[in-house]
Length: 113
Image 1: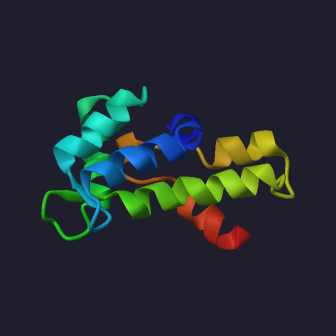
Image 2 (image 1 turned 135 degrees about the horizontal axis):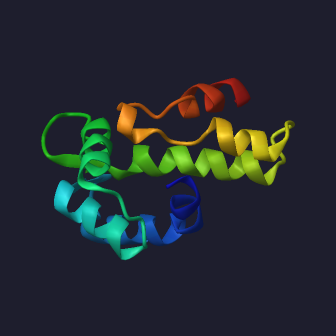
């Protein structure tokens, strides 16, 4: 998922913004549609976990801005070389949605900042 979202970050942002011009949330169905449209295929369990994580108010709307911001930061760190072995960074930042968490992804980003 990291690679796919990073590759399609701008297209995803435009898609979501087109469905929600006044704020940075979209209904869960639109979020799922956007992921699917850009080839980000997740099984139902992983998709449900992702939606729960980014439905910050429990309203059925996904905060796509917060979701995409994670990948925007990852892209900048990767582009700068990250200071460590990039293959190790890729392994460290691998998303483990089945476990219900984003593994060390957020922690690594906060340490890099």
